[in-house]
Length: 393
Length: 123
Image 1: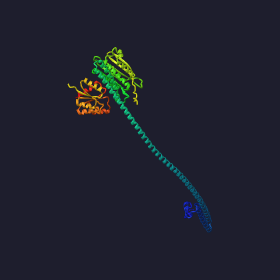
Image 2: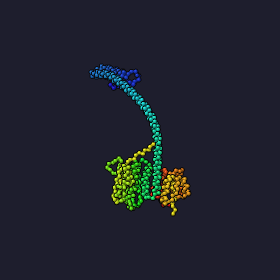
Image 3: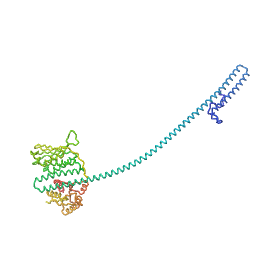
Image 4: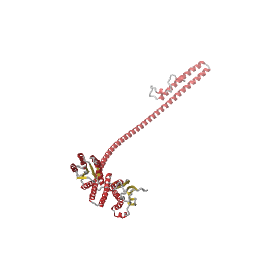
């Protein structure tokens, strides 16, 4: 069979056949069918020729065997021709199906590609639109943000300027107030100096020791008040004062100016720190001045030696109060209170002042004494937080 | 024994009188009082005091600090300042006059005594 197709075009080479440029208008399956038909015809012709030759050979040979062989060959050749023709037809049909499938695939691919391309284009278009919208939105937002920032900055600058001006005005007012308060304290202290000078001049004129003593007591009281102004002035707050600090100055100065024998009588101090208002402080100062004066006048007669102790400390309690309790104690190691102390208490200005001033600071006075061992005056009071100083307009 | 002469410069007459009385009681010879810086300068030129007790606040063009500087520069007279108060600026100015002491009003006899005694003890 192979020999029959030698030199002829391979009928299965559909591409080669399809690519034949001679009849471009024919469809490939048609071309293959024609070619298969041609081949079949050729095979049949050849088979016929072979049959004729064999017939002649059979006749010529006259033998039965040869004749039988020739018949068989003829039948085989004719069957081959038929088979070739059928194969050609099948090949043509297969090619046709293949071509149709290819065409369908190509069409489907083309459609798919086109559809994808359309979808992609639509998608791209949508994306582009979205991107454009996003960019525009972003630009608008940025512009808005810039405008807002500028506006905010301007408003902030304006507010800052207003605030600065207000702060400056407030500072000026505060400076004026401070200057005014300082001037008031200065004048108060100057006036107190004038009063002290008047008392001293008056005492200088008198030859009576009692007059000297009374005027000295008055000077001591004025001095304790002047010290409060000094303490307030130095603290710079004017509304409050550290009571411990202030009483320490009052005690020291009162003791120094009244002690006749500083080498025999010592002063010991133990002051805590608590802020109080002016009213409470000035009463406490006057109270300490009176008690120191009392100790030095009556506690150490006939050059007796000893100590005067002044203590200001918080009262230790189990519960913590909002305004803590403090105790102020002035004691001495002198001779103790005289037997006529209670009688003297009713007539002595100093002792009456002690009672009044104890009540003034909101406390209660406790007096204790042991003959020959000394006397003790204790006041327990509530340290009142300073009130804000209000300047009337 | 020559007494130390102390010029009192104080524009409050009652206070000046009180100080003079205290100085006298302490054994010094008080001079004055001068009530202005200019007057203090004139009296110092005439009376040659050993010490000047100078009020810082004077009702005059020349306040106590300026007058003290002039007295120290011109004649080398030491000054003790007296004042009812002193802020930081005033104290800084006062330091330039190199005072030998400072008394804060109202002051006690013992304070005056100690300050003046300290001045003459050093000299």
